[in-house]
Structure formats: C-alpha cells, structure tokens
Length: 367
Image (cartoon, rainbow, N blue to C red):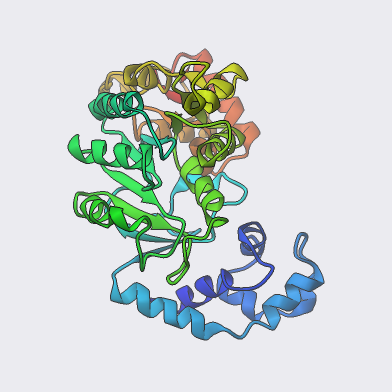
C-alpha cells in the first residue's frame, strides 16, 4: 500500500468533510497536500470555509487510517479512490460520489452493461419468477447485475445471476468485516468466488445501521446503467434508489402490479408519474438500452471514415465509440476531456454525416 492511501483514507475520517466537500478539495490538490495546506488557503476554497478548514488542519487520527490499512492488507481488499482506474466511472458523474470504496471481488465495476435489480424483502412468487426470467434474458448480453444482498428480490437477483454465469456485485451498508444479513454469508462467498464482488464505502467495524442504507443506495443507482424495480411499497429503500437513479439521469424500469396490491404500489406510482418505464421482459430492456445492436466490423467503420474529413474533436469522440457497442453521453464527456459544448457539437456533426447514431437512454454508437 502506498503512503497516498493513508491520506486518502484519512480524508474520509475528517469531521464535516463528506463526499461533496472531498471532491471540491481534490479539485485543488492531492489528498496528502490537503493535510499539509494552511488553514488560510483551505478556508478560501468555495464550499469549505473556516469550520471545515479547521477540521482538516486539526485532524490527528491517522492511527485509525493505519488500522484500516492493516485490515485491507490482511483480507486483500482493494481500496478504490476517486482517481483510481478501477473506480466505477459512472459514479464520478454523481455529485456525491464516494471518496473511497472498499472492494472484494473480480467483477469489472466499469463493465459496459450494468443493471441494478431491487425490490421488497417480502416478495411474492410472481416477483421471484419475473426476476429469474429477467436475469436469464439479460444473460444473452452478459449484463452485470448489481443489488444490495438483502432478503427478497436482492437475493433472488444475485442467485439468478450466479445460475446464469453472470457477474453480480452486492453493494453493502456496512464494513467488509461482516455480512448482513448473516444468512447471506454463503451467498456472498459464492459471489466473490464466481467473478462477482462485494462493494462498500464503509470501513471495517461499521455496523449496518439504518441510516447507512439510503447512503448505500446512491451507489447502486449511480454505478448502474439502468435500475429495475421489481416489487415495492410506496415507501422504502427501493423507492429511494429509484428516485436517486432518476436524479442521476439513469433509466428506471418498474414491474407493474395489481392496483390492490400494496407490494406493487411503489412500482405503479413510478410508472404513473413517468419516473419509470413499464417493464414486461428482459429483451425490452436490452432494446431500450441499445444493447441488442449487432457487432459491427471495425474495417467497415474505417472505410466509411476515410471518405469523411473529421475535426480533432470528432476524431476523439469516434475513438471512444470504437471501444464498445454503445457509450453513454456521460462517459463520452468524461473520457474525451472536452467541454460538454464541444462534445455536443461533435456529436451533432457526426450524426449529420451518418458516422454515429443516437440510442435510447442517452447512448451513442457508430453507424
């Protein structure tokens, strides 16, 4: 472990400094430099001020960070800081993305197709059947399944993913020194063993307290291309996740149910208020997300491009699109290093020249 990790971890321990403030600070200096900076410099940073600056300069609990590093090393956990290559890139587009994540597993957190499947803990047989059918249909495109390891729909989704040889990742509301619920310890081990993973922003010895779950839910929503709500009441964690996904401009799908069924009240509400698309089957999701597109030979692309003179910005966008079948606009903005207006102009020109096409869900691919 590098010395950088000590300061990166310490940044998550400073009182009054949450993910939003940490992101602001990291725009001005590296993690280590933050702790060596003068208070007069820190308090002038917009969004920090004197109280937070004082929390940083007076921070002395580096021993807690050192203790966590020992835990990480002992159990071979991967710490993923905001600037690390393996950090889920989609989370970077969320204003409150976690400063540091702890990861145990092998699943690619930046896979091209990631879907969150969530729902009530007290599911019906109908919900179980639909979830298993959905995962089987999504397996055609090797989709990574994300959920929260909870009783009910979460566990069904994870188990169905394992059955269909799909990578599946559980986002936890506690540290990696425990599994909650304890009954799912075996399932968690199977997920890690079969190219899945366990992910959390909470350090060891953090208990699964009630207030941690909504915090956890933003990771589920933020790192997924789409969120599927199977069954939920009008209140609860699944509704929070769906609302968060909407706030992050993600696609949300919901399984409709009987108007007399309380377990479907949340799904029906989301559909009625245009906060989720009505879900019928997995193939519909693949179509909406643009994941059913057939692979195109790079030679054909290159031949087309030979007859079109592209600008520097357009070439950058094209190279990004060559990496996979479809790319989200947020990823294009992130990888290109261009301003959002420059990306928008390049995309418009490329569409007019029939070099690329737009897909539902703010996705783009080469024509």
